[in-house]
Length: 134
Image (cartoon, rainbow, N blue to C red):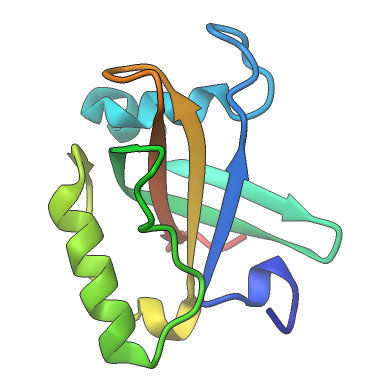
């Protein structure tokens, strides 16, 4: 996307969960399927070579690795809102499902492999700009 990762309507970050219990890479994102973990770890700092954002976890879902719900391009705000509402509907953890204002600010989706239910699954965490700023 123009403007790099932080300029995307829905920046999708996919990375391997590199350690069962290890804090390296994206291992902690697999824990967002737990509402208790998500509630106590709502804020995430994303830093890239071109900028940084303080993000707020909005929801998380455990999906099959074959599921194609990780989108980065939309045909306008209505298309994005419908996609967002569908993702919130499938979430196992929901902290704030509202899509109000996300189209203007953009969202970030972090997907990592997890092993809660199936051998081929992903925990997908949906985040938006934090009200606290960067």
